[in-house]
Length: 307
Length: 307
Ligand SMILES: NC(=O)c1ccc[n+]([C@@H]2O[C@H](COP(=O)([O-])OP(=O)(O)OC[C@H]3O[C@@H](n4cnc5c(N)ncnc54)[C@H](OP(=O)(O)O)[C@@H]3O)[C@@H](O)[C@H]2O)c1
Ligand SMILES: NC(=O)c1ccc[n+]([C@@H]2O[C@H](COP(=O)([O-])OP(=O)(O)OC[C@H]3O[C@@H](n4cnc5c(N)ncnc54)[C@H](OP(=O)(O)O)[C@@H]3O)[C@@H](O)[C@H]2O)c1
Image 1 (tube, rainbow over the protein chains, first blue to last red):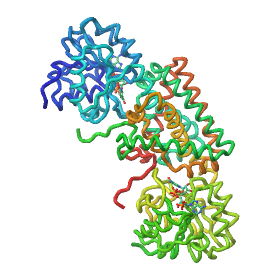
Image 2 (image 1 turned 60 degrees about the vertical axis):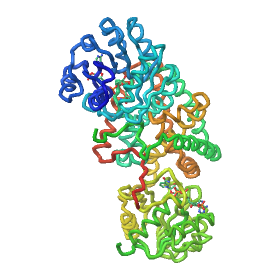
Image 3 (image 1 turned 30 degrees about the horizontal axis):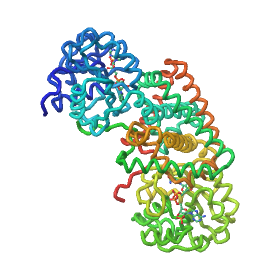
Image 4 (image 1 turned 180 degrees about the vertical axis):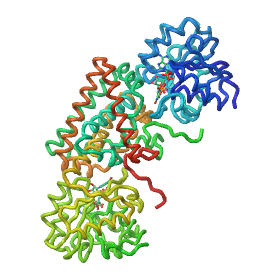
């Protein structure tokens, strides 16, 4: 237990990320009171029942009243509506942050709704699982994970306080600008997810041909693609619609490379394949050297460990 | 310790798969004597030193002399040369099997070299790690993994004995025909690996743009692609060259699907993305129901567990 970093924290959206933040705040005493709002009544009552919110409200406007920190934890496409609603009800001096997987589009949607005197500091914790909803969260989701904050011209004291808050939940905080965030994430997360969805879609069509064998022998590599492709459709739809430019850029490069390799296979050009496969090893080595691998690959997904 | 299933087993090629088989045979007493051959002297002496071979030979012909079971565990592209060399030296009544990741091409390369009176039963254990060489093997690699055998018209007693042998190493044995094997593996393993190699190749080009961030934030999804793309270049070159038709077929379908999704992103067609991402969830569910998932996704790669 440390001293609370914020007196009153409002969670807007009560799914995987928000519920994990709620549990973490309770576990490490980071907030005195946690309020919450989600679209459905069922989610709101679950939040109370699970104890990660002290109070829930049927409207976002009520939930943010008097809050020192407001966390927007809805799908990226829902950020604008929520921001429009809460804007007039934010307490002067409060901080608004978000956890959306895309940053430029969220800033465009949210910033115009934040009144003078309220700090807006976009954020993105690089942590998740393939599960969603209020029951999927756990306090240690952010432990040893990066959380990226976009300074966006906010007051240094407000940034420092938000940094302390995320560090209190175990995250390693880094600052980055929004455009850069979106391209880095397009490479490290968004495009890999789209590719995984696609590969699983292909298998889905083939299922009738090969019956249940694709399922049965999925451990040969395919299985981990299915784990990713089980992620929340709303969240990922919004990610691709809002990080369109960077994703299409990386996808274009991906397709070019894939065609070159496809051609090498067709032409029987073993040397080109060999050289390509040798070059990619170096990246793996860098990741191991940078300490960014753990024993078990997990597509960035933390495991519940008794939190 | 069970009674030996074969008196004398010859391992041709002494890398990850063969060394794991050697250790497993020793651990569970499946063979009285294990002989070995590999291309380089260094590998051969390592095999003796590590104790998974009792005798090693500088030529494959010598290694297979008097063997009851001969296991071809070289890259797929090296199968033909090895089979040509050993053909005249095989003991009548012996069984020849292989562990190659492709089956039709191996049968075409090996079968013509197997004399009358010797059983040829192609195989493929669905187990591996991203490491290679004689020092990477361990006895439990095959435990609870599938091993596919291609009956290929061999005598039922010979098949039954080979099945016992693999079951002795902990594998679940299934029979399948070669063409079917190659298409199932193209979907569940070969194409996913090619895609992972490609994605890592894209990141390699971008590294100069985004400096070390792709490495640093790799846990967001990309990292597991790099694990796969660290696999042995020779092995994978051979897989794509020899399972060309099935891989190109699946790649073609993959590209088609990817273009459809890419177009949906470009056009801002959220409904199509949402529907696609919803459909792929069903496959994940089937895999969980079929008991084909473990807690940690591992791209079919087993972990050393003190074997
Ligand atoms: N999951 C990940 O891996 C991950 C990682 C990092 C960042 N993120 C980002 O975090 C955010 C939340 O993701 P999540 O995984 O926590 O999602 P989630 O589990 O699907 O939960 C989403 C929550 O938002 C609520 N919501 C949706 N639309 C709303 C609206 N218009 N007004 C009020 N509440 C609304 C939902 O309420 P109901 O339950 O009532 O429908 C639900 O409580 C997204 O922006 C995502 O990009 C996700
Ligand atoms: N790794 C996997 O995930 C996996 C899974 C299932 C099946 N397989 C299949 O298993 C087979 C072996 O793979 P692996 O991973 O064990 O490979 P590996 O660790 O790279 O070892 C290959 C072995 O083959 C030897 N070799 C290569 N060319 C040879 C030749 N012309 N004559 C004699 N020996 C030769 C090498 O000898 P030197 O060391 O002297 O060069 C080495 O001992 C391949 O066909 C692969 O498709 C692999």
